[in-house]
Length: 176
Image 1: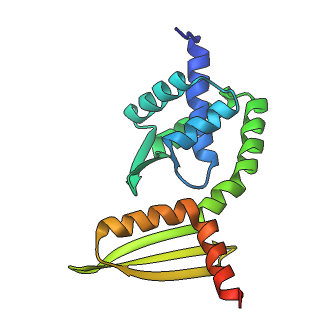
Image 2: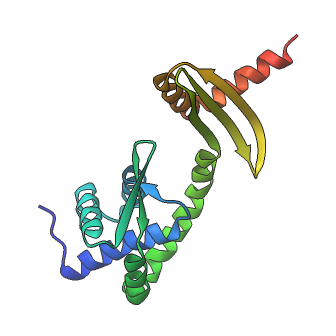
């Protein structure tokens, strides 16, 4: 199996804390794992093991939103990171900072595609779909649907295909 020295284990866990501290929004398990694997900081199994251990030790907390679990640094994790920050080599921190800046625009883009729904009455759900760029609403659409399942499906499809939907609606409105 994979073996790391105790110092490497500590450094790897601190690196996960550093990444979660660096990002402005909580990350899913997939996002944390992808970021770490893309930068070859550790292998998949170690990432999963260390995330689990950090959650159990209460250095990382998670919340659930839209069926996804989002990791964020707890106050204990932040204090630990501040105390042991010097154990992460400056070169690795600089690499994380640089990689994060490159990914930041993708993360911002994703957070600016908004899909929400709420129950209006027993037989009606209201869906609000938006595209926001630099705090300006470029596109907003409200829909009424009869079921929660349809509302969830439309919200999920909007997040996955908003560029195509937006482009097609614009083309339909512009063409004569």
